Length: 333
Image (cartoon, rainbow, N blue to C red):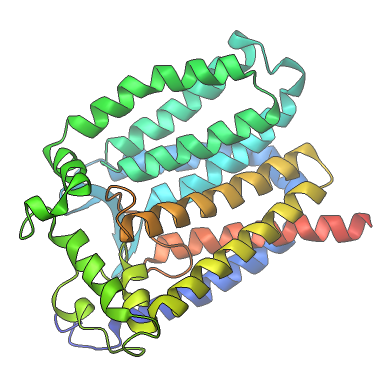
């Protein structure tokens, strides 16, 4: 904030994105999904095109060794966040259309895997392993619920394992993150610094916290405290009770989302709702898990809370679509 010359810099921008997100959520809650399904291929195709464009030098913006953003008028847009919603929408439509041939490798399974592999591969190219893994996991959940045989899913996971291991070990910074996860105290001033500072933030909060806005870690020590490690700052400022309340609210949200999924009137609505709930649930588990040292650092934001315009817009769109499905349930009695 000192670099931005404005102590409320992130708050102001986050509020702008929140207002835009509210409009998106309202639109998504009212849109006719049955009509929108006709454009499912186009919606996903647009996401894939954006992923290709962001990798082109002087088109996409590079920061921290990654090329993930477009910049326009001082604001950034991350196309992989858009793709999360697009691929869930596409797969929900695809799996319902192909429900009679779900076990047909050539007609159904291979085309779905090709689309998933293309999207995940482009995101890995940025590079963004955390987002790629999240998307793959969400789509695999949809495959399972739609009715893919367990042996097919097992074969998919076995085939993907070497790719995942290569992606994890081919980059030195990822290898260092794994080592830091195993024992951050081996290099407390280097690769283990961030997770150790996260522990200190959570530990110093105690039961009730040091007070809202009174964090020391976010000012001087903990990198990415407003994005990837926002949960650690919540734990420091609001204590165990505050952090637990945030986790409880996510549990309530996920439970309410699953109620909508189980009551949805069509296979498409069920798969769409499940994909959206699974996405938010996985991102929450990964972010909190990283903050408390239960998972290696992944670089995923905490839904609705972490600073990040693209992620907030995507999450608000997901919320709107869940409300849309809920509205269908009420209309159907």
